[in-house]
Length: 428
Image 1 (cartoon, rainbow, N blue to C red):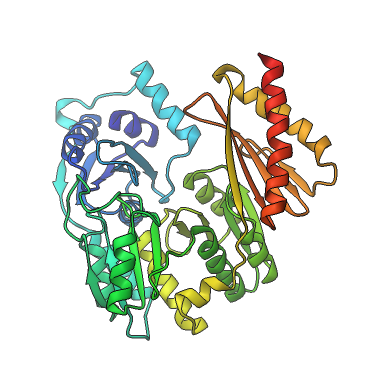
Image 2: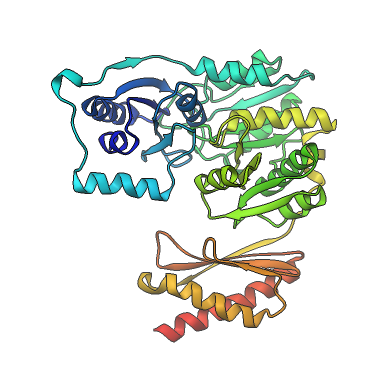
């Protein structure tokens, strides 16, 4: 694969990083071998968070960065995320180009005199210096950090301490089996962190996923901060600070993002699900902030990769400037009920079915405000919205509905599910 990336990017220098998964070294050896065989130098960063690898790819003027990680997925999985020299992850088109090169074996090998050189060095200090140069904290924060045995295990506690925080670290040892909790930080997987924060009387708890591109937050009362609401609250803060501007999020995020951002004079642009689409849209529209409701936030002023460590520190700064607790910061964002259903549909017809359902839904909800086919079909109504998407892995159509009240959400779901079921039955 690294041979194909080297060919596509015309790389002379490639960075390689990995999270703590047990298969990481095996992947690293293979990727470095391909890089050297292409004639490119391979600079191995060791265990680093994904956003650090993305930042360093740009900072060290490499043509490509290859991060070995399966992000928030279970420990038995692994993969590679590719970044360009601008810190943007490869989009679908670039990934397809890499796959074509592999399929056609159209990569090229350097001759023996031009084989690349490898070195092993930890340059994560450049990332820490960047944060400490651009961010100061005035309050004596007590933060409980939970890296989950993942890639942020040493860097996150060090940066927080350097910025003056009192840090209590849990699960801060590298272990690719993720024995302490799931590598995905959710309300369920962070029950222990929530208890620790409350018992210690800490100001906030912060947890990261396996590769550190996501962050989740616990308030001082031991309550998990809802992903949608905290995304909306922080987006509104950024909008207010800049006097307007664009926030980018995906089609599945709550409408509370629009409610909060538009109240501060901003605009929301929605993309396909996936942080690479959010990052690309941010660059295209010159947006300063964007994110997905899974804790993946992108800060374009720093780089274009979702960044858990940076996001958690910027959130603390926002709380300082707003003079609010985390609970108070989130409480100003409305919470709307979201319902989800899935309906069986053949793989060969599910994509066309989504389009047909979209056309019919417009007649069922004739007073809709707007529609989108960015990712599946999304219809915005006066009192909520409905999203119809074909599952990427199963013979299913997925329905997501949000309403201003539970009654409204149930009504929208009932009508939408009827349309989907009728369309599916009609194709059998």
